[in-house]
Image (cartoon, rainbow, N blue to C red):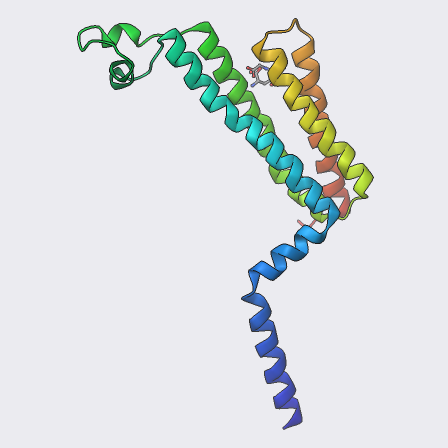
Length: 177
Ligand SMILES: N[C@@H](CCC(=O)N[C@@H](CS)C(=O)NCC(=O)O)C(=O)O
């Protein structure tokens, strides 16, 4: 009877814990490495998010649109709306910069969370996160100004190196095939 009571209590407790996600999330944010990961992830995601409004800015100021209704919304007459369906080097440059962010920041977010959960030292983790965030901010500056190569290439390589180094640590911590 005592065994049944204890088992019931344990089951009830584990059910309650499963249904308190807020508590688990806040505990995760008590972990300094995870907090650093969330800070730098948010920084690079916001930087990437900025590329959308920047593309919009160049579209409107250069009058370069992808849909006739967009051109009309920005003052083109019905007849010549199609004239504004064109490409522009500045718009394309921001779009390539955005695309490159997607190719690099999305893997950082995925590998970074696994890395943060693999229990690295705070100082080593901060070094990875700061190097990655710095390299991506500099990559965008080098792309948009533009700065002469190999500045952009080096920024890209440094960011890629940080992500690969985190992936190495994740796989070194344990693998299961
Ligand atoms: N998808 C990239 C892969 C290589 C890469 O990311 N290179 C860096 C350094 S040269 C870059 O900034 N590429 C320009 C871009 O992706 O638009 C490309 O096509 O270039």
